[in-house]
Image 1 (cartoon, helix red, strand yellow):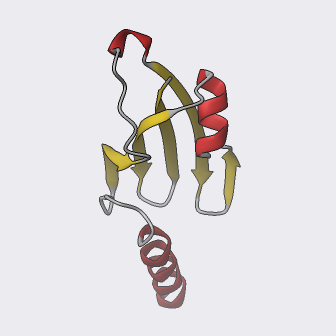
Image 2 (image 1 turned 45 degrees about the vertical axis):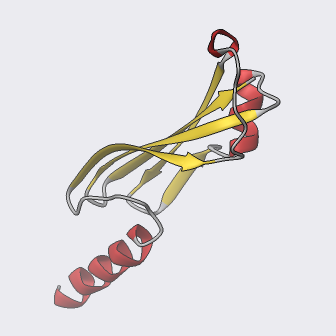
Length: 103
């Protein structure tokens, strides 16, 4: 039993090392990513595209949360900035939602 818990703990630590912010048992955070540095002169023309992916028990992950897919979903050709929203509950479930803003 100790070996299984040790392996699960190590797997969790290694997979969570790639994230920006993650709580050990629960995460609900949004953070920005610098994209192109492009500025939008008229904010009324700002578009938003979203895409997401979900992971169950770090065994199965589904979805396409790539920046390309997200921009296509919003009809965006010039990316201004990107937000990442992460939610997780220990090793049971993790969701990532990418929002791209631009023209």
